[in-house]
Image (cartoon, rainbow, N blue to C red; front, side, top):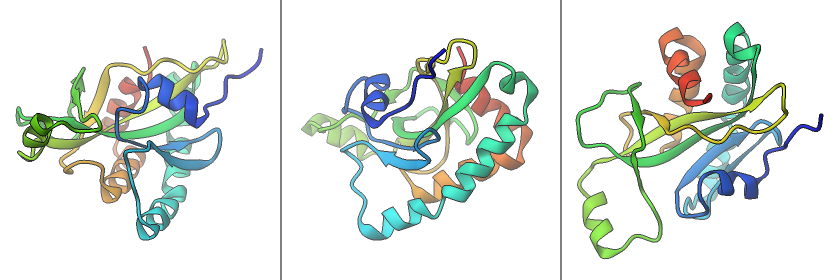
Amino acid sequence: MKKEILTDSKMMDLFNGNERALVYYNYDANSWGCSQYVSFDKENKAKLESLRESAVKFKDVLLSTPAYNANYELVAYVQTEVLVHDGRNCGSLIANPFYRKYPLSNDDLEIFSRNWVRAANKILSRDIKTGKIIAPSDLWMVSNAKGINLDEVKAALQMGTILKNYRAAFLRTGDR
């Protein structure tokens, strides 16, 4: 059985093209990536690279979860931007959110300027038996951070490493 490898183009295909802002750690490539709509300056790219150790620790802890490890392999940690205006707390799961898409129309600019934009996190998994990357579920874990946020990337990875209930929420986003 040949294992399907996550590439940047596969990542964009899995998330319906380049219309979403995405930041992700690709465990197959051991590197950070982002969609064309996330423009980081050199300082932010360096900060993102400094989170590699947090991403590796996160993977190690997830793989020590027997129910996950028996069936899945971690392929990616992903963050995007969604609209959340119903008071959900950090760590809440949200299904089928309204994604921030690019380029933004004038109407979209007004909607997204109302502070409803939140970071949302998930994992992508590979089925161990088939070697195939599993299509992303509709579930995302919401954070309190406004939009894509490097501090939130670090916090989400650390919380997933430390807190069992946070890790359980992540696991729900990565299987079907």
